[in-house]
Length: 329
Image (cartoon, rainbow, N blue to C red; front, side, top):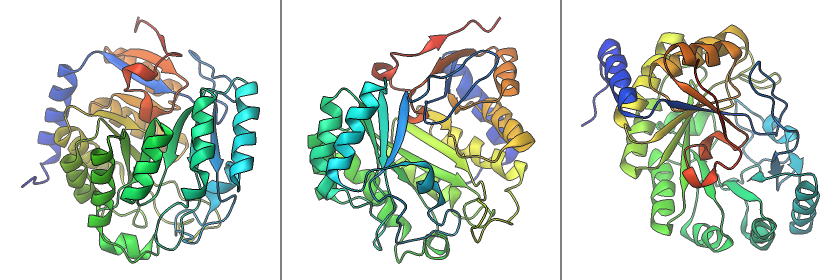
């Protein structure tokens, strides 16, 4: 039904869609890591990533091997999560991402942490939860906790699920997770990793088609950034032309969604190039942007808005208390 358009047609259509949106572009720099550009510097500890499994993950995915967990604040028990909420709010934190390693079924084991998550919300923290695959029971519990948003990676090819995530699951399981969020009435932000299959484009277009069916308000695109010490440490980055094709398809297929280029992406010149491609293809937000990308957006007539909220929430008008808008000049 949704064929992949030619590159030139997709880019032109993406630009036309961009013209229908307002001129703002949201640059997110949550305080989970230091960020400083010529125009904006974030506040330390304004946002935090918390792992409820510490450094443990049953899957040991090919691109991560649990490495991402080592950069998170460990909180392996509900008591530790409540203590973390206390400490973080005392330091001026405004939001947390509750994440962790997945179990052998692809789910983050959240059940025992629901009261602690609700406690964090009562403390005034915005709470985003990275769930992995989702059940109706978990979604209902998270709804009762008052979580602000669920983040879920969407994979569109069974070979990638098997070879990269080491899971005996199908793309339909990821579609089901999104539909469960819709049925539960929870805001959700699907993430697509461009180049997830060892730097190749394999299931990205199918993932975007599934996302189109789920109709989320926000979509986050990230790009494979091979981590040292993982089986993917030496793979080639996805080609810029392939990245642009996926970006344009994401914009064309989801014209009304808030489309963001997330924080996970390779560094250096490749990062700068992909950020400019995102701007050219009508993205609404970029996390931790380079100075070159900010300047380029301004030259394209975009009005930069800087915020310390996670990029997946920058498109939510009710979650922008710290946003600062600048004229493009």
